[in-house]
Length: 141
Image: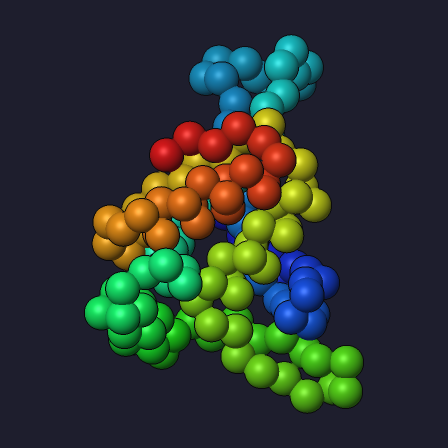
């Protein structure tokens, strides 16, 4: 499985994401077998959605800020800005850049695994639902 670099134009600037493709075939089909059914799926994992909304308590808003600061030290996706400079995307911006790529691919479905939200909260689950709706395809968690 080869990993390729894919440029995605986002509202944050031009980003480069790592992408790998896997082709699955039925055992015994033979090298020259013609496909009878092709499905294209995307698999994403460990999005760690963590957001706050204005109606959240001050404690929850502080928890979100602390948690995002923690996860942001592990993201290393950068956006090239129109002036040629770069800036590092934060956790949720990376999720939205990935969503942009998924919409470009227009797959038959998306498998979402791992830690989808960082911790249970109404705001995180609302955001997860909005995120899945934005993909424009069926989502399987």
